[in-house]
Length: 309
Image (cartoon, rainbow, N blue to C red; front, side):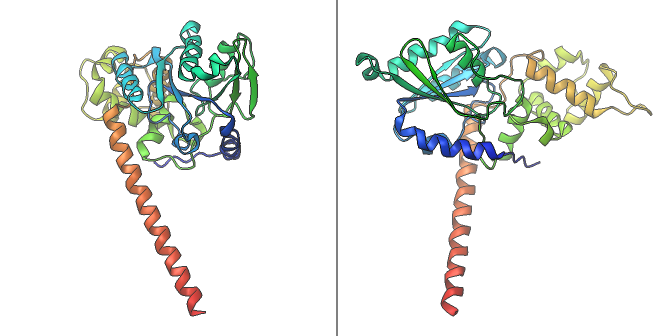
């Protein structure tokens, strides 16, 4: 299933960020620690130029700690990028990011000037809650769904730091397809634009390969089936999600799986590795090359048609 969700306010946000970028000293990009690659916005590298970026792996309490550490080292190895893992259940870990960005641009701090930080992130990664923690007051509207913030705002913090808040925004086309599924599983895309059964099937397929023991433990499965659909059927019977005729209610069981994953009840699970992200980058590059070649071909055809006229 191809997922494509790009509301109008997100297009506006992209333009606003491009306009404000020359005024920014550092970028704070909030990521979901469970999907560090899929929750990155590929528009940020194109917009940032040489501006330093702090990757904040939020919701780290829900992610596989071993994978989180690997992701942190992966980001830190890149030029102009630092990374930190936080959880909003520990406000101190969130506030630590202010010290990190100060260290990243010491010339702003030493000159006792305002440190201007752009804070951004795709929907439902916890950006608004992070802002409220940093400001010690309720400034940004929060909600456990995608697309809550829809207007840009400027927030002055006590320690000479100014935050430029931006609406959460996704890129126009979610690719490769796996990224769309991972975003949907974590709630980065509104449930109303996805099919829960399809999303839950993808989640179970991944869990079967990478975290089978968590499926067995949570759903008390004596024998773990090999196929995702059979696992969903077994969970349905364990949770009494059965329709007339003894047929599994896949919609209800899908809701259970997704809700328990998102809440952490299922366990601390990361949905992508650094290696999988590198493979995805290759796919993205190939598709971009295909689109560029197709555009060039179409442009050539148009020029020929104009010459014939």
